[in-house]
Image 1 (spheres, helix red, strand yellow):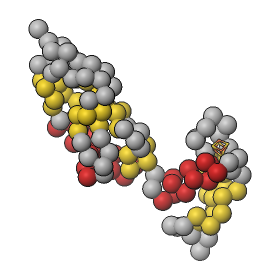
Image 2 (cartoon, helix red, strand yellow):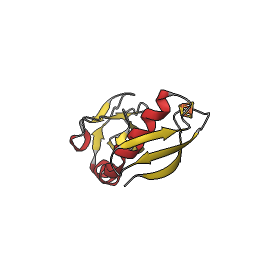
Image 3 (cartoon, helix red, strand yellow):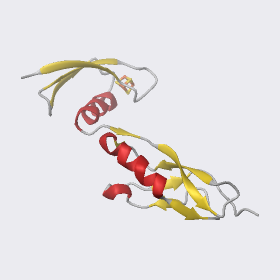
Length: 123
Ligand code: SF4
């Protein structure tokens, strides 16, 4: 059975209101998209929704006890709670360099967790 949902495309600031006709898994039709990117966003949002994730991890011997980190690409939305739990277990030794991989292949997704700033050793 084909259903219709309305979603707002957030792939650019224009924010088109899209009508998505789908059968639960496959997109049948996207109405109202201003461009192909919006159609691709809609299909991804329905079949494999992903979000960039920003968090912190512990630093051993750092100037501060935590360093901010982020995913190097959109992370599968259903796995984000598991990722948050995993990141609470991660501790990296100081010094940490910006763009350093602090967790490789997080939860087997092929997505790396990257430091977003330097964290030098503490006193
Ligand atoms: S459909 Fe295209 S033009 Fe419209 S918000 Fe999405 S990316 Fe922007």
